[in-house]
Image (cartoon, rainbow, N blue to C red):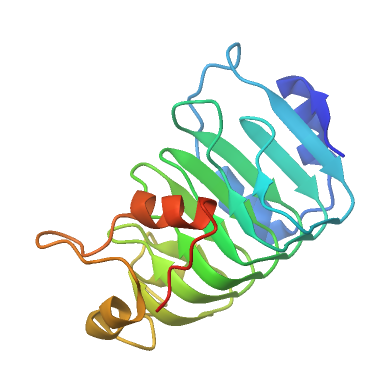
Amino acid sequence: MFRTVSLDEFDALLAAAPASPAFREEFARYEFGYDRRAIDAAVHDGPLRLETAFRTPAFCTLVVGDLDVAREVDLRSSYECGGLFIVLGDVRCEHFISEYDAAVFIDGDMQADGAVLIAYSDSSFSVIGSMRARLLIGNDMCASVGSGAILDYGIGYCASLGSNGASGIVKPRYDHAATIEALRVEPKAEGYPFDADELADLIRAEEPIFR
């Protein structure tokens, strides 16, 4: 399914892959300061469909094709934090769970029938196409999208690519109160009402998060 490659091979394969100009421009905006000697990389060529959950197989993961996952896409790995996750195609899943200090790039559309959890410090989440999710938990982290978003519930928002969260803002259709009412998790008394890790643990345990 995935093949393990060196980071030099990963960079070369990404450079040669059929990515859009908008992806190239967005990807070039970021600098990655991880220690190249201490991490691994994996690549999958072609579309990938899974009837189970998907865990990233390496610190740097590249899918050259659409990714269709029946359960969650989960960036939690054996590393304490971080990661680079790139899909050169559309992503469809039940839930998407990011990670602290992780960078996500989707060169296509993103559809999550459940939750997209991106409320992780020092992380980024870029969708070159459009985004559709029943729930977005971003707190003070926004999702960058290229052609709009539709969100039902959420704590957070989407904004235009390259705007640093300042323009093209899309907020959830229903407000914070309705989001609190829709979820099974009890809101916190202070700060943002929901912690992404608490929701992620429920998803990993295959427990429902909606009432």
